[in-house]
Length: 154
Image 1 (cartoon, rainbow, N blue to C red):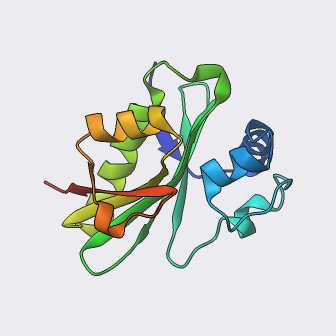
Image 2: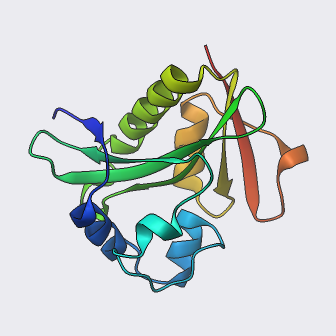
């Protein structure tokens, strides 16, 4: 399967909006800043953060497999967020592929020293993937609900 990052379009946002089934799933994906329910049409504006870049993970047929964002953080840092895989394709290694592509894109564009992300403590599958990818938890920046993780860029 040939995967690549693409600019999200209206049909991607429409599909993405169907992947979030309830308010809890919305918080897991987007954090507390986006209210559920939402429409695909509203997503581009709801997801906008200063200097953020949004990407769709697509296959050769332009099918939407996943979505993720990154944005500059503190100097020398890029933060990954709102990472999600199409529910039809979970458990097939696409999360790893999406992370690798996002990291490569962010590294090319920003040359960060550090890449960070947050993951909810009750999301062990994501936490396992991030650890496997080399992200290290930092409890001093974490909360009771969320783990802050960091990867030193090569």
